[in-house]
Image 1: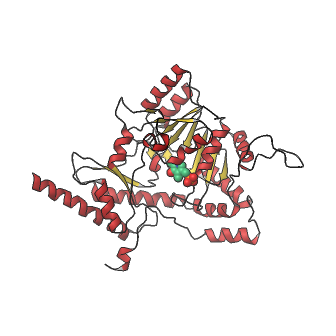
Image 2 (image 1 turned 135 degrees about the horizontal axis):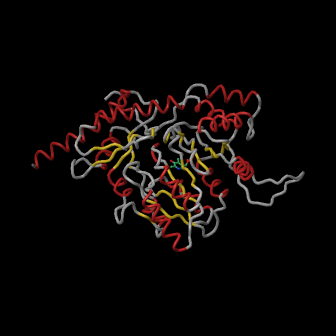
Image 3 (image 1 turned 180 degrees about the vertical axis):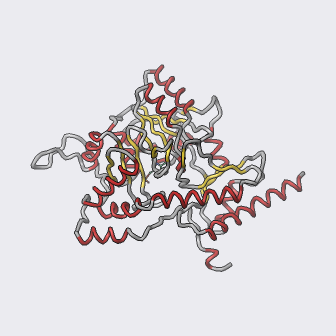
Length: 393
Ligand SMILES: *Cc1c(COP(=O)(O)O)cnc(C)c1O
């Protein structure tokens, strides 16, 4: 095998536009190295304009943005917060930072995101107990926006604020509106593997300008107006640096290209495998447009002998990075004993997805040659499975 063939294909590596360096240089030339500065102001304005919210606050990570959102909504000791179960642990850890308790809500099959019927039962139960949650965290997984009309109607009915964890869905829309702009607060991540990156960073967005003013205050150590250092509430050191905001500006300028590239890669995978028995890709709900952050698929055990384990092992042997889908948080040892509401009775949709699905390399800089290398590698596994089933028939 040539060295090029063996070069590692990553799941979702950073993809620089080329303009980042000039913004970094500008920060150095003007000595805006210290936190905050003109890149922060510009990046926040550009994010708010892109997402369609009144304002935005740049912070050190998506996790920090979720923590701030919960603080702003007054989540504290003993409070309940409803959260999607099918997600990365960072969606729920900040609930624990606030000494509150998560209640996990299952997915539904059409978006793989929070099930409105499970949320409804969770609300009814909580209402009966007199334990309504302080907030609901809805995650838009792999770029697919959740069923916002149904979820928002329930949150409005019970008068509980909704936080959108849009860490994976920058650039995705629901009925033409950007993800992150529906809830009381929305959060984004610019971690190295996300659709755009500042190497590490996040953003809190909202139409509530007063709430975001308070977010800026809390994120900079909650310093009262006084000539000396005066503090009457507990703050955090959660702001983004001016240098990283420069990287973010350059990245945001190409977001639409990045979405187009990821969608094209997804379409190529669909074209390559849609004829395979027992393979189905993450759906796209009518009226939504996913950024296809990661191309994901599930295998139907009844229809194919190919397994997730075998596909992952074969790709790893070929130096290709693929991953299982997120392990539901209600199954994590960290959250043992927390309450969970399944989509329909006893059937947990997210457990089935976790057991049968995987994420394929999806970086926006991935060449067609590399895509074919992934497809060829997977086809070996699928062909073997077909042979096996023919022999046993
Ligand atoms: C990446 C991610 C986060 C956390 O963002 P960081 O910037 O890494 O802190 C939160 N939620 C989801 C769904 C994510 O994928």
